[in-house]
Image (cartoon, rainbow, N blue to C red; front, side, top):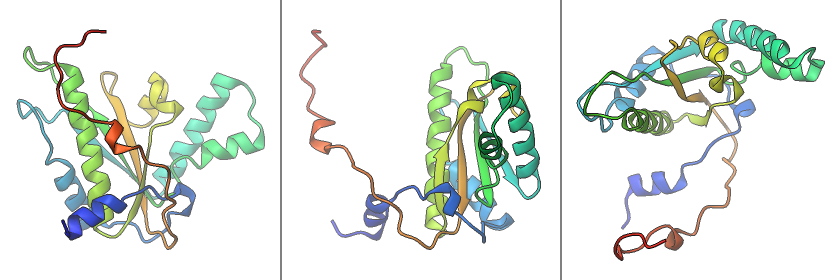
Amino acid sequence: MASPIIDFMLSRGSAPIPELREPAPGDAEIETMIRIASRVPDHGRLEPWRFIVYRGEARHRIGEELAALAEKREGPLTESRRNQELARFSRAPLVIGVVSSPKENMKIPQWEMFLSGGAAAMNLVIAANALGYKTNWITNWYSDTEEGRRILGLAPHERVVGFIHIGSFDGTVPERPRPDVASLYGDYSGPWEG
């Protein structure tokens, strides 16, 4: 079963966000990654997702707004806590938000549209990795708040699928324990009996 694609998929992992650095993908590479990210199962061809590119100074402005939101929610922040929020989107040189943007449809449930967004996010990760960049996919607390989503450019009906942090990385991606694959599947044995 020797295949460069299989080897690539078996070795995929997430790099630590603070260790992602320049260079980041440029405009042409970003367009290629989004094109690949969009080639996912999409029942009804609804395109129930979109992408937001966070780069340059915008990453620092978002940090300021997230720090202010955290302080509004938690009260005065320690310097360490404030710095954590200030750096949320500036630790990596590029962050691409994958946004679930469901469409009204009588036949296709919104959970299915959200899953399509998850597939788009995974394709984005794989595309960036295939171009030689490393990635890390996170959501974080601000994804679950209406004001956090507004700050990040989402409309009220939209939800965060993930923020893909992208950059160059010289180290070795840390390996983590992986599940015992044999315990994850089995042959069908009839209806659930409880």
